[in-house]
Image (cartoon, rainbow, N blue to C red; front, side):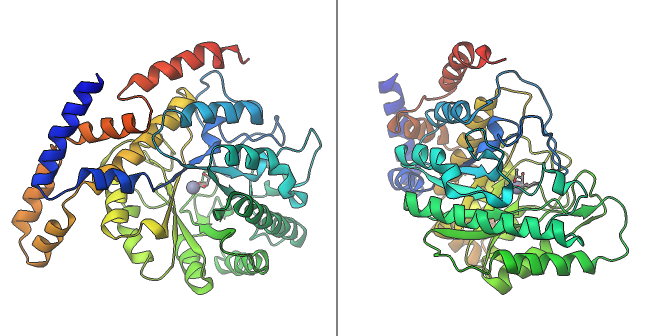
Length: 420
Ligand code: RNT
Ligand code: ZN
């Protein structure tokens, strides 16, 4: 087998070389691009704050596949399993509700870095960075549907404090791990039915964000991102934090903008937004997701838009300015497999993009030779990409092809099936 994949790679290397593409250089580059795995695929966005609390904020996880992680240790073990099947060194993205408070009820505005010590130690032992998110949902103080844009000062103040403590936690993570944590603010705020005043909540949100971001933090430890949305279940008519709102906020305040693939109109794609936004903001966070007819957060697959996202990052030379995060949650299939499929697809898309003869394509386009551009792009689709991908997996000591699934099935049999 080793020999077969070696031979296949050698042929692929030559085929790409004929197009002027260096497959070894592509793999070296690929190894430097981390993907931030979202913790919440492992337990259906549950967290450990309150096992009884249901998910709200317009988010919905469907399916009841057995074996979801019930404790931080289980979630870390499951993530370990997933990471062992994904080539490269990546990052892990936590939400505030994944704090470890030793059985004590801790209010969200009182959370401290120490409540994430278990996660930091784990990440350190794996040479991984962490990313972070304050959790502005699944909480009694979010029941009205408004948090940072609430007219109720008590509610608003509580959530501002939550934002403030979370930035400090992000900075502590980044400092401990030697790589900046991206701390991303997403709020569910919005109206189910047509509002009269679209301005009021937005002015309040701006004020709340200004208060949250008032404390200067070292960008080598923490970087702030803001994530917009079009609508949520129960907030179909108006979302305070819309795209224009946060784009403006990010530009005016030098924040990262987070583009979630599921947060736009059905035919609107984030791949086209990357170069526009990066003309005006320094860095982007992506929530790579797969909206199926709505913001359904299906597991990411190697579809046209995923390849387009990766192509825009690579073709634009934006690797250092784009933080790639995943955001999907499917409880109808094995959750570890969901992580592995989605992350491997993201990495495949990046490799696919790195294997383009970019200079030649750009030259054809600039010279107006759209015939060559189209011909080349189509021929690339049937190049021996899989031989390079398989070789990359083998080089990184992770299973080649669908063999990873055997490992997930074994883990399911020995670990997941024992969970009630
Ligand atoms: C919700 C946003 C947000 C969440 C996570 C759990 O629509 O996409 O990013 O999915 O924070
Ligand atoms: Zn998101």
